[in-house]
Image 1 (cartoon, rainbow, N blue to C red):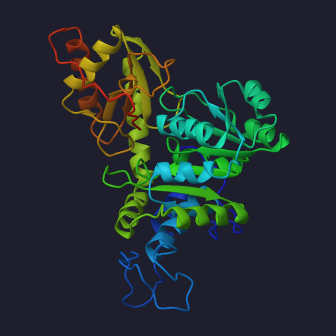
Image 2: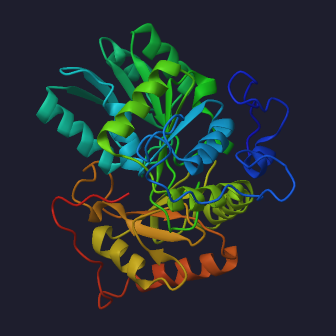
Image 3: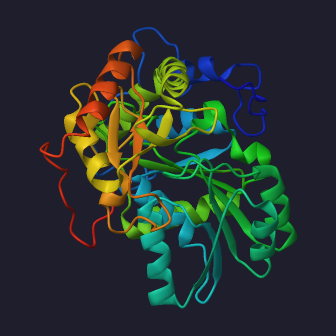
Length: 383
């Protein structure tokens, strides 16, 4: 994993600890006799008057523990939300009516859907860019209210120059937000690179067990944090206390899960680069996500996804189980994504089993009698 500066005391209060240690220890109850090691699940919608929580939509001790832990890892102040979409929506709510957003042409389809909704309902303008072209991003930032970046992008795995984009966004008077779901704070801390806001789908690598829907926003700006909290409260985008408990449990093992899965991903990239059944293998050099482009287009790619025994055909990522899907099966996916692109999310299985399973699936893709993958309604969009 990449080294990076630990969060300063001003931001996290843990200025002398490595990220692996923060993931294990932050957000736990005080070390007192008979105190629990983990923050319990607080199943409360109502509190006695006179305190800070007031009501279950405004606060929960389980939320606070998770927010402390993820905030320490990202080096900022965290707000937990009901889902990754809720987190994205909270940040986009900062865009004024008639405002302008710069965003990657290849982005999570849910983000694209929200951006198009801003255009339709609030008169917004969206300028789509290739995040690899820093000059183009800087030009598009002129007059913008928000520069939104995924790095790596989903599913094209393009990487942007975050410090340079941050400088360009701020010079133009725009806020800079980064979806850090793919990299996680262990591989990339956008706040250190100048971002104003960081977004996570905690459903993915942070919780890591495919059993939680949750999101988060992290910032070092107190005013922005207050606005995100207000949005959460007013729109009811609150996480359930049990979901937060599960996400916290997953966060505790994020460093070891990520280290293992990333090592496996790099091994698989080495094994399959140049494979005769593949037109391309995309990997940004870090992380657990690989995109392969299957020769033969959509039908062949669907047959690959349907033929695996170890890899799970599913529209998610970041779990302990390795997952894959053809992204253009979702009609909302950008038409510049190859029809045969299959996104791989590498989990914790043995690399030899994953490699053999994928190799056999690629061989079976030549068999036109194999069942093709399922179709999706026109409005559908997957993560």
